[in-house]
Image (cartoon, rainbow, N blue to C red; front, side):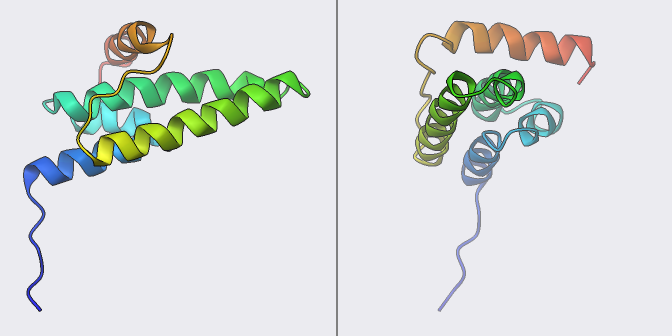
Length: 108
């Protein structure tokens, strides 16, 4: 059985999906500078990561918010693997600005 070669498009989708795995989103922002699709999802993954950190320390409500964040991350992974540019509900515009801020601040 021949092996399937991963194309650049497939690789971008894999990077985009990986960007929802919390801190890896920062790595994707640094590594995939010319991949708009991966960076779009990395912006969202980074925002979810940053929001989830303080929520760990807030009993009950914070934990519920982290559960929602986890669900959004799973949806983001699925959407990125299918090639969709899915924007986070209520946070999509903020995610883009946050990602740009990270890139400029840390010179990624």
